[in-house]
Image (cartoon, rainbow, N blue to C red; front, side, top):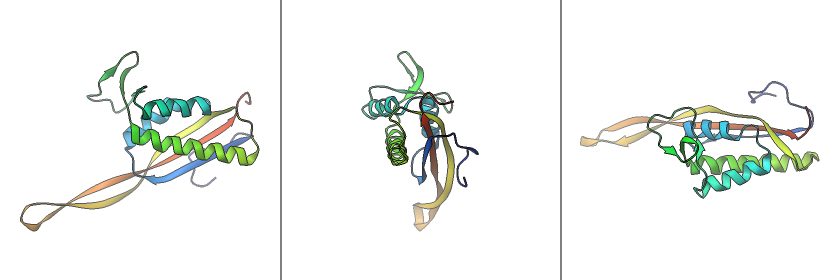
Length: 149
């Protein structure tokens, strides 16, 4: 379907996406990598724990100057990105319920991509303004019923 990075969707699947959300691309990439392959309920529980800063997200990319956490290595608590992914998982859960899928769902595809850039300005000395760009992020997820290949 147009707009998704996956070409063919599995049988008995549901999908959802959020476009142009204002979160960190680097945090979103690491959260998506952490969630891929989990079942939907455990992914929601993990995100709740990340939001409460009980469980860190292990970083596999963009980890320059990232502190190590006990038991996982380099990691952080990306609360804003975790909230966005939790909203995305709630959306895909509602879509699956509407399609009549069972409650045991697993994440088979999760992706993060760059959205558009917004040009912004910051004031400088002597009445000038300096330009900077804000990147927006697109999120997408596809789930299917567990046990289906």
